[in-house]
Length: 91
Length: 87
Image (cartoon, rainbow over all chains, first blue to last red; front, side, top):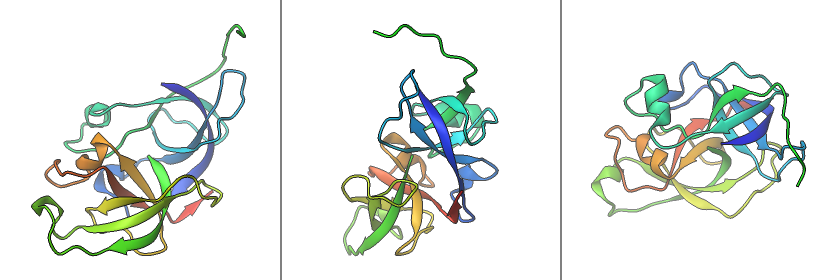
C-alpha cells in the first residue's frame, strides 16, 4: 500500500464489464512529506474519494474480485482509504 | 492500472487459442497530461474496446488474464477501458 494524491478523474463509455458503475481516478504516489513521485497510476475508488484527496492505494491479485463480488475483475489498484492526517518522524 | 495511447497494431495468423479474435495493440504509456511515460508494450484487447489512436486504461500482470472471459490467457497486459476524457 502507498500514499497517493488523487489528481484527475477518468471518464469513459466503452469499458470492461467489471468497470461498470465504478469511479476511476488518476493518482500520483506521494511521500509522507507530500512530495510527489514522478509516476502516475490509475485506480478504482472504493471509499468515495474525490479529486485533491490524499488517499491510501493498494491491491493484489484477487482482492478486487472478493470485495466487488465479481467472478473476474481485471482491476489492480484500489483507493482503500482517505487520509485525514499523517504523523511521521523525518529520518 | 495505467494510462496508455494506442500507437500501433499487430497482426498474427498463428497464436494461442485463448487469443483467437483478440487484437494485440502496441501501447505507449502516457501520463494524464499526455507526456510519454516509459517504453511501448504490447497489450491484448479481449473486449475489442480500443482502436488506433485511442487513450486507454490497461492492467498488467495477473489481472491482465482476468480481463478474458475464461479468466485465463497467457498475457501480460490487457486493455480494459477506452478513455473519453480526463478531467
